[in-house]
Image 1: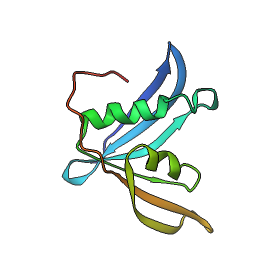
Image 2: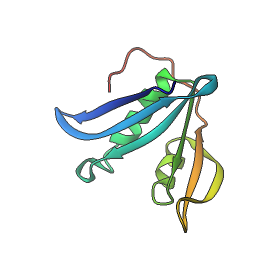
Image 3: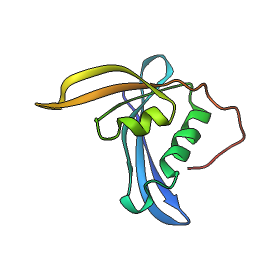
Length: 110
């Protein structure tokens, strides 16, 4: 059975986006969907969310589009594979994995 967890992202009590995580084989956590509203982008919110998840999970992966690939690469992910026509004809997907080991820290809430 596949189980997804949906997290609401808030900044100062205001809705800022969401992230959906799915647990897959061998303890891998897959980012199914990750969105930050435009008004909260480029303010470190997405990076903070990824750091929080990384502090809890050992293996983190995602498939992303060309437009958001730079964000993932800057956030410590490594490109493993380009998948042609993944989303639609002419729209490739990029399989990325976290290259940063989990952070050992206290509890951090999303």
